[in-house]
Structure formats: C-alpha cells, structure tokens
Picture 1 (spheres, rainbow, N blue to C red):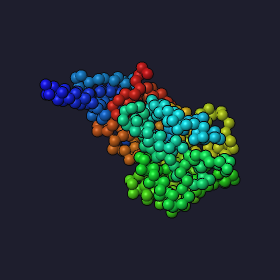
Picture 2: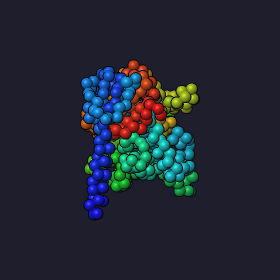
Picture 3: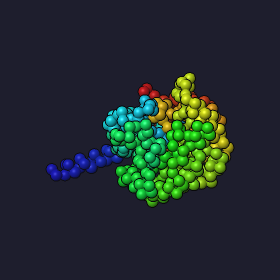
Picture 4: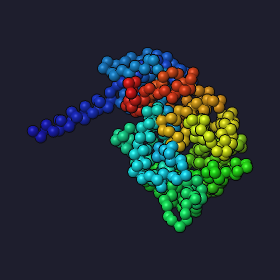
Length: 424
C-alpha cells in the first residue's frame, strides 16, 4: 500500500511536466522581425512551455499541438516599456500627492490593475522607475506576478527614489510644523546615499533611481535650465555602490549640469532629458548611455486640453532634442512615464515618436531590441526566435505601415501563456 502514494506522486510530476511542455503553434499572417526590419509572411511559431522552439514558413505543426490562428494579423515580440509607474495614476498628478491621499494598500490594488492593463495593451515587460511613495509595493506586485498569483508584465522595479531636501519627490508647500511622509528617500549626505542604495537592494529592487535634476517648476523661468541636485561625485558614489551589488542606476535628468553629471558618473539611462544638448548626447553615444525620452507625458491625452506656459515651452524643445538624438545615434529606449496618464495607453508614445521623424520600424526596435538591452535581457526577450521567452503579441493592421496599429493589440502571450485572446 505504501507504494501507491509514491506512484501517484510520480504520475502527478509526469503530468505536470507534460502540461508545462505543451506545444502551441501560432500561425502568423505577418511577422515583424525588429532585428532585420523585415516583415515576414505566413510564418509558424512553435511554443513549448515558456519558450519559443521554432520559427519559419516551413515549420511543421506537431500532431496534438494547440493552434492559434493569427493569419489575419501582424505578429511581433512583446513590447517593453523602459519607464513606467504602475503605482501612479492620472488623478495623482494634482497638488496633493497620493502618499497623502491614498493608503498604500489601495495604491497596491490600483497597481495590480495597472499591471494588467499594460499587459493587455501588449507590454510584456516594464521597467518601473519609482514607487512614488508606495514603499516596496512594486516589489510585492513583481513577486506576485512571478509566482503566478496575478497576471502582469515582467517587472523590473526600483522601489523608492533617491532625492534631496527640496528636490523632486520631496514635498514642498507643506506646513513645516507638521510631519508628513515623504515619497522619496532624502539623501543629503554621502553616507545617506550609500545607506539608501543598500536599503533598497536589501528589500529586493532590480535597479536604483536617482533624481539628478529637480521638478519642471524648478527650471529657470527664462532659460529653462533644470535645477542640478547632485554633483558628479555624488552620483558616481551611487553608481559605484549599485554596481557592487550588480544593479544599474536610472537618472531622472531633464538636462543641464545635472544630466551631464549623471552621464559622466556612469548611469545606465537618462530619463526624460528634454534639454540635453549635443555635448551631452555625444557623451551618451560614447558611453553607451540609454535615453528614455517620455515624449507623451507632457502632452495631454486630449491634446486640446490647455497646458501651462512651462509645458508649452518644453514640448518643442523635447521634439528638437529627440530629433538631434536620432541623428547622433543615441540609444533611444522606449519609455513613456505612464501612470502620469492612463495605464494601457502607452502606445501613444509610438505615434509621437513617428510624428517626430522616427521610422515605424525603429520605434518598434526601441520598444523591443533596445529596451531588452536596457534591462539586460536581450538574450531572453525582444525578438521572436528559438530559445527566447514566448512573449508574443498581435495587432490589427501592420504597425510598420501604420504605427497606430500598436494601439489595436488583439492578442498577448507572455512566457507561453495567453493573456489576451481574439475573443477578449
């Protein structure tokens, strides 16, 4: 009798192994290869478990394989957003931040919904840079996704950001006689910087974020020069400590001396960067620094919505910087700052990139190949080829011909599991 439970366990393990290696065949009418820029036709993608097993026009579909017919659609790799905030919502952009108005529990629930919205919009990987005062809720959501508890993109998270007293993500305009929670980690000394990096890494972040310049309201009202918040030496200290733990640093930096300090200090990426000059862009090319431009965050979803004078002046400068960065060969990684606007609407960034002169295939590359390099996952994601994770999406229409097709995602598979089907 004692052999029965043992045999049952063996059979159960075998059944799980069979199920986990279930073969799925995807028939793709069109298949975009971001690496070559070629749009292939009538392709078959074989998926086994979490990985892609084979791709090609002559791939035979094994007997018993599940078949997904996307012959009327355009198939491409799952998209990667290099700059998101799943714990931030559009209504949080008022004068009173969510750390004051919402509980961390409620913000976490909102973050779960945001993660699902991003996944269903075709984004199978997100680099989430700053929990905006929600503590380590981003880590909790990442871990819940990884454990299969909730659906969502693959997440790379930074936890709380590093800032200075009076800088971005430090509350201003508050009665000094009362104590309020702060959305950022105040690092006004070198010891505080090292301690903040170690604290974040202790609790499981994937990267570190530092605010190298202030908020837009702190720009010089005449020249728009951003407020520089950290010296090159200070940022280098953060980069060095993060590197010791094998972590990268993302720098919020609009331009000016703060951005230059961040580039020279060796950060992995510059976030926003609307005032980067040619000297800085050339330094980024030399050093391999990525740029997440976040073009759409300053442009209302309804472009008829009025914006303040500062934003009116920022938008054309941002466009000019983007065009110069393309010409100089900066590694432009797709990044949106979504959360400041509606989750699930990140594809509007593609439309603006193309409007500003980027070819559609290059915009797609920025959200697949370049961003996979940004998160150091280029051997695992970013293209549809054997051995990589089966992160696969399909659109109604061909985004190489019409970039707005990326706003019409009809199918999403992440690691071999379908999260959005044609009947959804």
